[in-house]
Length: 228
Image 1: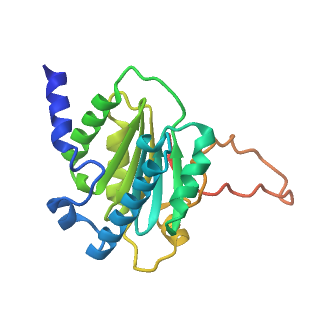
Image 2 (image 1 turned 180 degrees about the vertical axis):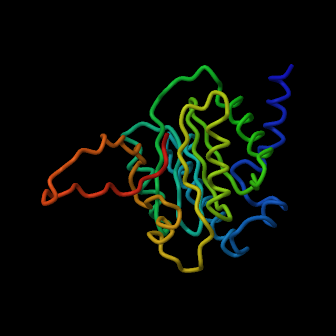
């Protein structure tokens, strides 16, 4: 019975999840109305193109756009990933960032986990859940959207990590941008790197060792999307 209630809840929330264009979402979104409209149009155009061109993986790719920066999220064969990127780039977005899930299995269904995640995001104090778009695949969670500040971003990440059944969280949450701001600046603002490459986990750093003062030190690794 509890599972059925969660499924029904997901259906009721489907209009909000992955869509910041409901009445409440528009009121609470940090973007200007014109920017929201442009982003929605861009994402819809790319999604339609993926489906119209007999692209077999089109249905499995979710398309999001924030300030003209496009994100493709889904599980598609490796030989189809380049075609998806090429289709998205035809529409001249400011950047295209793919997040491809590798095939995997989980004891918790995507539907159930997505419902649990959305429920916890709604209940999190200090967080406007309508700003957060989510994608779930075999225990792996991707967070996208525009949050008002870094504190809200951290609340969203922490909430997602604490959901039972979640095995990893990747955040593409960004802070509000000024009109005309370059994608690279936005990436620094969010602590992630805007680029046309799949995200990769930040490697664990070995313990610090004493080195001679005149010995060259290795360069610091660039920031990468959070993936734990």
